[in-house]
Image (cartoon, rainbow over all chains, first blue to last red; front, side, top):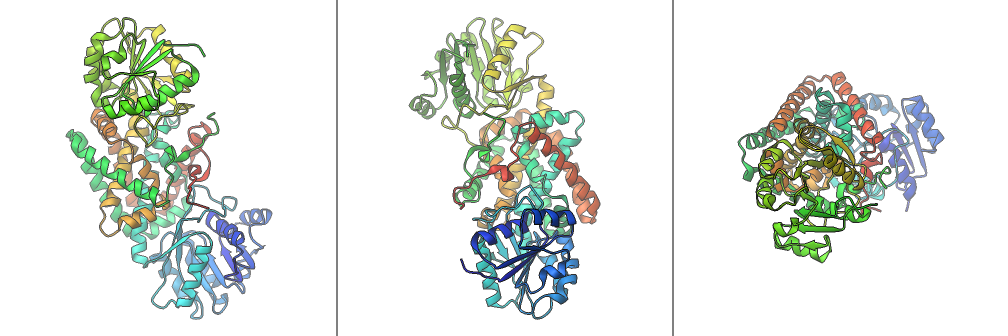
Length: 307
Length: 307
């Protein structure tokens, strides 16, 4: 593989930035990876596991002379980072991010981007429930999708370079506008996460069912929800605060639909329920056929305590 | 392993009955397994894959002389089956089931159970999103829980025998009353399933987001919901119709809590959201420590199209 950006700077060294670093090295996409994280502990771990070529104690050092700077911090922290590094970005560099929300990031970051820098937001749809500098791995983006959200002013050359970069990290790439991205993600990610958090919270709260019962008997369905509800709290707080309208809209639709199914249960309308449950089977088949999930039962879980 | 029941009859030959057959053979728990399924196609497949020692074309033949009869049909079909086989059950035999709801099964089946037969309902908390005679496997119950729901009249000897049987199939066993079982399952299984079905239905319905987008971008969280929402429609229709009160109660609590979190999003109450999301992390840790789920990222999914 040929080098795409000579120097890549990663701001934030969690699951996504860590996986980017591993995937850059796997494919040899840059000569130098520099990194910065706010927490000294994270920086120390990153140095210990050799996550980047150089881990800097301040942001401005990390982005110096970088050809691509990727903001991989919670969405709510992006503006402050952009403000600090903006004046020091290399002329002609590309500034990108990996935030789960795009319209608010564009609104909050754009004012700090100099005219001679290409600001091209992106969002790799990949992750796990783990977080921190040790959680990254090179395969995270393989066959997942990365959505790139250029503006009307984005130059084709810079856009294509970022597209080639994400493909070389293993992703499929799609381009869309920020508004549509935020709606699509409200459906495929943000609403499901809030729903999972809620269901886990309810189970935890219900005094007539003990925590031990919830835990022991979780294999009947509940445990699937707990994986999502174990995701990073700061990241998700910021997602909901920054994609308020679309998330609330989808949750409104969800509640309507839930009430409809509750009514069918209450009235004993078995045909309605059966039809509904038959329809939802088809979409899983589509996801498996598209290579976005495994067909192995129970996600192919391998429980070490099983024999 | 020693034989526990000389002859076991399985009524219904889907995922659960199939897995019981495999696990009986793995451990050598009976001399003969007989089976019956309503559909001729299912019976043919069962014969083809040698699922049982004998597959009968009618129920009464299958249960003749059986020491243990297990009803493994949708909850709504149990009463009709019990009515048909009741008069032909062997004196001293145990009649059990694997239904996901217990109070209604007890109410509907009990009238058809002769006095000289032990009726001991049970519910193995194990399954996958697959169904049918080919979907069973011997390890399904390993380290999962089976809840046995005896009545006041249940004889200790018969109860202990069934308990030993389920342990030999690989399960942990817990005994509880029907009412509590139905509430616990409403939390750990029935409400999560309805919520997953609902979320998948909403995504499928939303005209501004295409099915292709929902499918391609599902790895951001949504795909987890689709596994549950691909479960057998008939089984789940019957679960909801037969555990109405407890399911609707938990869904009511869920909606309350969801509204509370929606309000926090609308008002921008980040601290509330962060605290909530931090609390829900702990319950996942408990589930992993109890051996009820894997700690591998993304359930350790192995997507063949990757790499």
